[in-house]
Structure formats: structure tokens, C-alpha cells
Length: 396
Ligand code: ATP
Ligand code: MG
Image 1 (cartoon, rainbow, N blue to C red):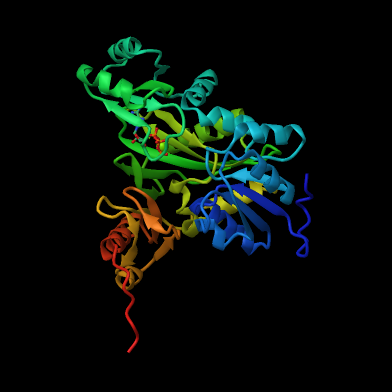
Image 2: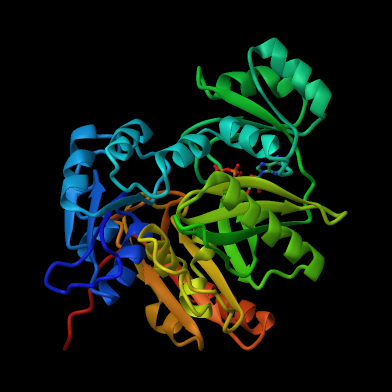
């Protein structure tokens, strides 16, 4: 393992990241601030992180040869997507190469059925669930769980794309065929009153530190808004933190994890899912906390002391998502109005084209109160629009 106590500017510690999207970009930003080196692996030339990282290897996330080349150039490997090849990473780890979070953790999380089974085994509350063996079996499970029931693809789903809400018996054949032959599971629908999430870090030495709880609003299965601190009572907050820290402990997580949870009317807290990486709902930490989720991730993967995150001010993050009417190159119109809103920070990831629902950037608004941050975020959101027109004004 690299001596992470020594920051030699001439030959800096090098962090390899599988995935070069916005999360990789923001990790690279923090790394650069401390003069650490970053190499990303991503199939898209000119991916968001490429402009910040020291180097990009252009290859697929599961490309064994490319992952090995990345490892050879770096001191430690991490990833910003769950699609990373856990078998190749396991081989590397077997040769004592540091992969963080560990391939075993990734393997558990990559599959929602495996992930939930692991949590249930460790007595961490999740909604009732079962793997679906056949269409008949799905009928039986819907009977048992009641309607609506949530059908989920066990792997490769994100932004709600792997979910199908079954509202009646009649929908079962369509739902069953929706994910073709992929492994599926059905979950009891949770009539939550709030969705929350916690960013929590653990380093290989076993130190654990969690961030303040954020409250999340999803639209069409995609995260739309995160509010920090979450508007929950102290009992729920403590419960959520305890669950998050316990999860990191049993998973032996190394790095920052985003843990999404449901809060019920009774005040129960259930885990919805775990992301073994920085998370969209933790972007607010850049402006509102004493340490960002991205710096904390670097600290954790390098086994450095974790910072104890403190909330400096309330914040609201809103995503800039591609809309239904626009596929292809795009521009953000209304930049002047947007940036004239007090307390607002704009992030544009640098993705070359827009697609419906694609995460193109985000806005974080801070304020003295949650209400003020909410108002500023709403003003910023109303100030811009996405357009396909990219005609630049020629200076007179
Ligand atoms: P993402 O990557 O954006 O987190 P995902 O594709 O992994 O999404 P989930 O997090 O499982 O999907 O679900 C997306 C959203 O669907 C949740 O945030 C929640 O609003 C809703 N949802 C998921 N499971 C349930 C459930 N059992 N009961 C009620 N709502 C649910
Ligand atoms: Mg989710």
C-alpha cells in the first residue's frame, strides 16, 4: 500500500477512478486541490472528469485489460459507478492491490436482491422482498405483498429505470415481461412520508463518520431536489445515522457511501438502497459542510483520518435534468438571471449532449434557513431553460 502519510509533490499519490462522469469530476477537483494525481477510466472520450483528471484511459468499465493498465499507473483504485467489473477487481485485490470499496462490498451491492438479503441477514430494516422465479410466482408475491407492489431489476438499474410499479393484477403479465429475461425481485410498496439519505464514510482502519441527513424529492424515479438538513425530528435523525453507521460497519465499507432510506408515518426508517460511492444527494456538502463528500471519499480510500462533517448552513440542491423535448447538443439559456440569485452555485458537468432525464448539472443554493435556501433554489431553477440553440452573440 502507498504511504499516504507522505505527500510528495514530485511523485504524487495517484488515485485511479473507474468512471469519469460528474462524480469522478468532483473527486478529481478535490484531489487536484491537494495535488494528488487522478486517472479516470471511461468509454466516452472527453467525459466530464477528463478535463480535470491528469489522464483518461478510454475503455469500457468492465474492460479487464484497461482496468489492469489503470491499476499499474495508480496507487489505489476506486470507482464512481456500480457497473465496475467486480471479478477483475477481486483479482487485483487478491494480489494485495488496494481497491476501495472492496470488490466484495461491490459484489454485494451490485445486485439489489443480494444487497437486501445482506441487510436483512444483519437485521437492518428493509421493505419485504422476494426474488421472482416465474410469472406465476409474481402473482403469488403480489397477492402476499398487496398492490401497489414494486418490481425491480436486480442489476444495472439507475435513476428509477429498473423499477416497475404494479398497481393491479392485470398489469402482472406486462410487468413480468418488462425486464425481459433479467433477474427481478418484487418489493412491498412503502407508503413513506419522506425519503432521506445519508452520506457515510468508513476508512480501512475502521473509522466511521456520517454527514447530516438530507431529505430527497424524486420525480419520475429521478432525484430532483435534496434539502439539508432534512426536516425530520431528532429521533428519526438519530435512527437514520445509527442505521447508516451500522451498515458501513457490517459491509466493511471503504470510501463514502450514499444510503437512501424511507421514513414511515410511524417513524420507522428502512433502507431503500446503498450506493458505494459519492451520491447525487450529497452534492450539497460541497457548499454546506466543513468537508465535502468528495474529499471525505479520498480520505477514506487513502486510509487517512476522516473529517467529522459539520453543517455550516442549510442548503438545497436541484438537479439540472435533460427534458423530454431535447435530445442532442444543448445550451443553458438564462445564465445571467440564474447567477444573479444570492447564495447560488452552478455546476455544469460538461456532457456534450442532452437526453430526457439525463443529469447535466446541478444548482446548490445556501441560505440562513432551509426556507431561504428553498426560495433561492426555486428562483435559480426558474431562471434558466435548456435550449438546442447555441448561437453565440458576436461582440459589437
Ligand atoms: P437511483 O439510482 O436514482 O437511486 P434506482 O433505479 O436505483 O434509482 P430505487 O432507488 O430503487 O431505483 O427507486 C427509485 C425511487 O422509487 C425511490 O427513490 C422511491 O421514490 C421509489 N421506490 C423504490 N422502491 C420503493 C418501494 N419499495 N416503495 C415505495 N417506493 C419505492
Ligand atoms: Mg435509488
